[in-house]
Length: 139
Image 1 (tube, rainbow, N blue to C red):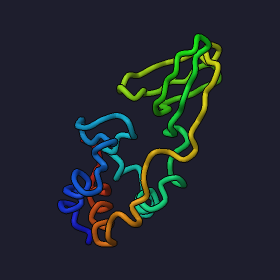
Image 2: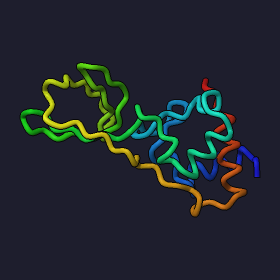
Image 3: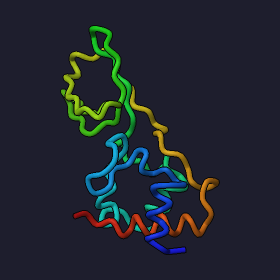
Image 4: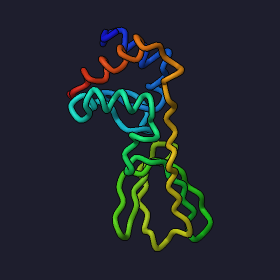
């Protein structure tokens, strides 16, 4: 384990992290950008995120579903929220800013979309992916 190069391969192939996460300007915005995750999260926190993602998901990143007063349905990931507005990235990766007064429903999904890798990767593979994530310190 602990091989960042192997971890990078797993990130893009077997683990399929790149299907949702963006790194250094490449990839979707469906899930949080991981470009500087190595300087934000500790090794232990990264391990928890991969094994029990529903417990370590930051509340601000939770998936949301919204219904506007005129019946429009939106789904995406919450980026920001204050008393009067909420900003999301929708499933087409558009940044959408909404006034809460215009919303009939704002539902925050507590589970999140990220799978647990406890039964998807071996202990060595997990260590490699974490080594890769720890190496991501931003541009």
